[in-house]
Length: 213
Image (tube, rainbow, N blue to C red):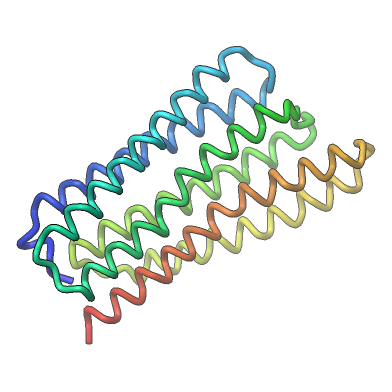
């Protein structure tokens, strides 16, 4: 996977794409923070538009990378690795957007007693995303990713722990059963971010091993 030495424009587009996803993650954090405070807040609509716009731009950049990879003389094995990594990674900004819409459209206010745990879960999953984003760039720059892979696994395990504890607390509460189920779905969907980060990590490890062979 040494294609970037000859394909500088592709490498720059990958950097641009990762930066756009970073902007999407920042918009997501601001939006979900507002929604956790007040799911009916009019400010949330503008923040949601920012998340949607950032996700859409990231998607456009990913398609541009795919197009350029197919247009240029890149060996199929390397091209497949890059495409597979980006396709798996691109689920993450989509998850950011979906979570914001889920909270906003369902108008489900997270009870104050759970908001701290929700924020903790969100931060852990955002950290998993940040680590895997750095790992993607590291691989494309021919850097070791083993330490990053271990950190991603640790964050995914931490997310699972918080998820289980939070779901148990939700179902032991006095909330209506329907609200319990909706809150559980949101908890699981937040945790899906670190699950997806782990899936990207698996693709990165495979590409890293193949490069070493």
